Amino acid sequence: SLIPQVRLRQPFFNDRLVPYAVLGVGTSFVQFNDRKSHAFDLNLEADGWQWSATGGLGIEYFLDDEIAFGFEGKYVWVDELDTKIGTEEGTMDMSSFLLSFGLRLYFDENTPRSLADLPESPSASRFYFSMKGGGRVILDGDWGGGVTLTPLAQADDSGLNKHWGLTFGVNLNRHWAAELALD
Image (cartoon, rainbow, N blue to C red; front, side, top):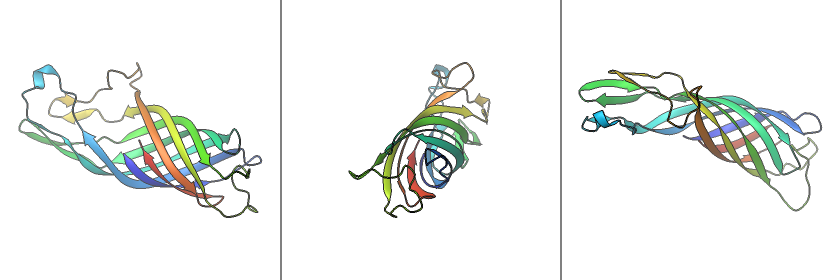
């Protein structure tokens, strides 16, 4: 997924604790490429770019004025993909819920600033980079035509697949940010 997002933030406790909401629209590349040996000769058409949207909530804690640790939960809706398995046509829904944690690193000037941009702070933008790791759950595994999606081999017993993400963004002011999320 490559989704531009907006982030609405509300700093608390001397700007150390910052809950936020994210919302965005973008695109996802969907591909089915994990065939088993008995399906190697089967015609399979199941890949393409699809519209996506995301919405969720998060909270981060500033360790200092340039590093914040946080948790985020968001739902990623992906437009259904038209598929063809042999001669049977259908659709595939790859929407999922993501739960992640990570570090947000702010690129700052050489002068210390308030943690989450106090109201009396200058209105200069603050750029950041974020790295996330977490889990993804398949919500609908029934693909049709006798095919079901199951968690990847690397998933744990609960069916949680590993998830990694990067975010580049800018705090526009105390409450608003714009970012580009790559999950």
